[in-house]
Image 1 (cartoon, rainbow, N blue to C red):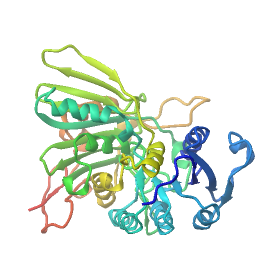
Image 2: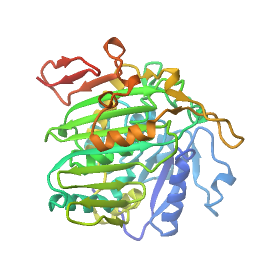
Image 3: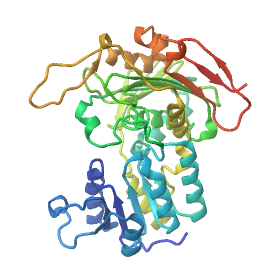
Length: 418
């Protein structure tokens, strides 16, 4: 791959500049001031006005709703794709076909088949592609791996992730695809595990050293919803790695109080807790007092530029998110999420500053217990998670080509390779 001269800012196009795209705009502005990038174009169905771009004083970027034409007219060398999930694949392939390098927001695709198309397009074109799991840039990740390697907490028994966030009903009205499993025949898979708290799942897999699709032996899901939506807003998943280590995540958007999501590494002589949005690590182990540290972080766009200019290793190449895509596929193909019974949730008193929302009773503690015990909701004896049979919200998918799976039924349905 030809290098870009270090003295030349990398011209880039941002597809999707509203919503989370506003964070990318601010980050581009920061790196533009450092001379690393230049915002050459913005792809949005409705152009941004000058007020939305006032931070880019002087020459404003070109704008167009046609992503391919914008890449051509601007001569962009890189692009950020921060658009609805179901649009990622075609936009990524459009960029790859033009030799334009990518920062692709998570989840990279809505289906395993589309993810494989992206992998093939990236491989054939020779472009660099970075997937937007920002937590992978935390310097805590290699530090935690070194602690585990050194035996600081003994033999690892498993990885547990917990995420308790608050989202109101307006969150699901912000876009036509929000909270949808599909639109017509198009998969969207905008559930709590696959989008808002996707980092919890992916970060746990990354710490486990099980990031590729080949690292996954099976996936168990339990999908529920308190809000009146298609997708899940309160769910858990347990991934069994090919090394036999369980990776469990329990997450909700219906928390009583919003908390910082985290991943726990469970050892037989201690534990490591990683609050991945804060880059904060707590080590608790036998014979030692608690040790806490806050680490730095490498920005993923900055790392992509460093890769193009100085051949630095990419932090999140697509194949390293294959295990997460196995989870997306398991959620996509699972039975429809179960609506929680009315007695399982409540609506807090309305306030002038907040839209109505639904809170699952006791969910904050339940999510924490799931991460602590590596157990699914149904295994914790939660009444609304114990319904079985045809109503089961659960499924298990085996990774890769395999013989016909064996299916065992119970509080959840398990499918494992024979």
